[in-house]
Image: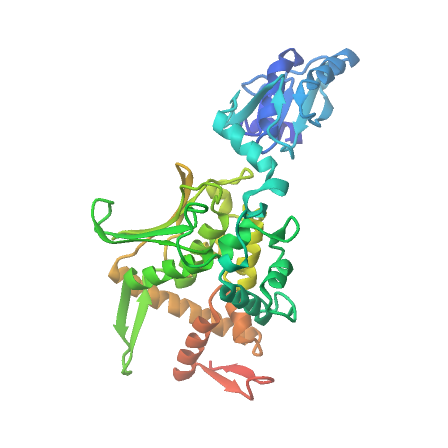
Amino acid sequence: MTPLAALIAQGESQTLELKKSTAEKERACRTLCGFANGLGGSVIFGVTPAGKLVGQTVTDRTLEELAQEFQGFEPPLPAQTQRLQLPGGLEALVVRVDSAPQAPVSFRGVPYERVLNTTRVMLRTTYQRLLIESMHTTNRWEMQAAEGYGIDTLDTSELVVTIEEAIRRGRMEDPGTREPMALLRGLGLLVKNDQISRAAVALFCKDEPTAPEFPQFSLRVARFKGTTRDEFLDNRQYAGNAFALMRRAERFLIDWMPVAGKIVPGQMARIDTPALPVEAVREALANAFIHRDYASASGAVAVALYDDRLEVISPGELHFGLTPDMLFQPHESKPWNPWIAKAFHRRGIIETWGRGTLKIANLMQAAGLPVPTLQERTQSVVMTFELPSLKARLKSSEKSSEKSSEKILLLLRQEPSMSAKALAEKLSLSPRAIEKQIDHLKKDGKLARIGPAKGGHWKVTP
């Protein structure tokens, strides 16, 4: 099958449309406009909508008329046109456009969008979103000056902790000072002649109500009875900076998250296992604070715990063409608030950009639990973790522990000098979890340390 035949065989889709001839060039340009406002795509002239390759006669006049039609795009839209020879002197034309860097694009004054395999006039909400995204690099919320805010409004101890954590983790050099304005300057959080940015306020404002200026610096947490929102067992609301609010959310989940406990045979010890991997939940919380829409004054990050699930809710929507499915596949990192994301990375709360959802999926699978779902609801993005039953939690904990132990032994057979940190990175587990597994393996006589901590190696017992 030729590349053209293979492309046609896919059928019309979000990125492909078939046209019988260039007589339909105006409608084709509307579709190209929709492609440019989305993921990009191709229009093939000389193919019926049913997928039959019929070709057409292509002359210089044909190409001139097509080029003239392209003048209707605003801003100008680069299009790549390819002529493909067919039997009988006929040709097919493939016209391709990429996703526009300056969306929204309009054709003859009207913006279009592609939805599945159809082209339609762009919805007003989509148009407004694309306008905001087009200004993201130079005019986003976090990089505006926080009018009326000075150093006295910030929690400088939180700022110093961030710097010292970044230094300890090797994510920045010691600036040689702990003077607050110098630290903010070093973090790139000052704008317009050393004014404090909104990002700096979101990250370091004092842990107290900030209304009316920034009511969105808030967190809502709730434990519901059953599986609906009909009855509360606990309901709280907090205001403050992103780091403080994340600690509040973690504390709430420590108080309310179901825990499975078991007695270890032969030991005077009880092992408690949270219903969900702590690191996976922490990553979800961090993502909620990093990617939320801070421009929405009415929104708040929310944590809702039910009998059967945990929901982590972030105000806003997905941007840059990303979909929930794409986030659980390798994807380019495009944080909506990159200044805030960078501070979370330096603080050590997130490890790398663009891998948060992948890390969550890996941690859940390693624990023998289903990957959480991601949904776009009205002006919010919701990650939902399914809570396993008590019996399932105990069983999955045992299986996960066994699987992790087997993987550790396998890796150490291959590389006896591998460190606990390297094992943790390989297996997407915390260093603490690796240390616990190693302790159990040593007690079971399956693993022994030969030589000192530095310079020694591991011996795996057959």
